[in-house]
Image: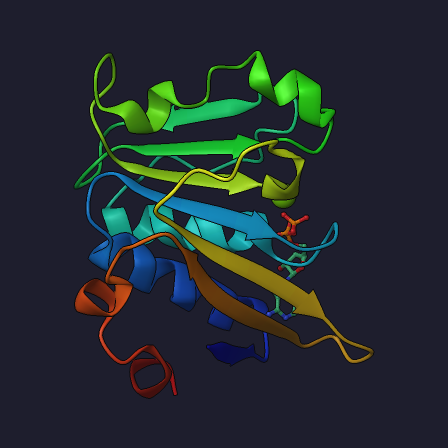
Length: 157
Ligand SMILES: Nc1ncnc2c1ncn2[C@@H]1O[C@H](COP(=O)(O)OP(=O)(O)O)[C@@H](O)[C@H]1O
Ligand SMILES: [Mg+2]
């Protein structure tokens, strides 16, 4: 599924929808160049979850945890890591549901992961010659995302 994101507000609105709708245990793999809008989308997720703390890029901290919303938000940015290094972070603790409560895991630069966790929602932000962006959503593994997101293009138009 492809959605047009004409401006940053649209990117944020898509995030907000995800934050309102996705169930605990959701893994969102975000891909796209620097400046494509990944952090903007996660800020929208924060809004949708009802988080009032500012969502800031976890480029240096690697993982930011927000627990004040409907469900927790775990926000990661793997930009600075080599795939082999991502293994050592034990990121699966964020979706295993054992030591930490399940929430929404949003991973920027998910292409750095060695193994793709499933089920997951894959969201690629594409930039074009114009300033506009496009989001391409696909899923990895068995999960009925539509049950949670409904008819996204219709809601989003
Ligand atoms: N759909 C969009 N159209 C135009 N600009 C956008 C869009 N989405 C985000 N932006 C802008 O792009 C810039 C970089 O966004 P950011 O979310 O930090 O990107 P990333 O995390 O992918 O590096 C921000 O100034 C943001 O407002
Ligand atoms: Mg970012």
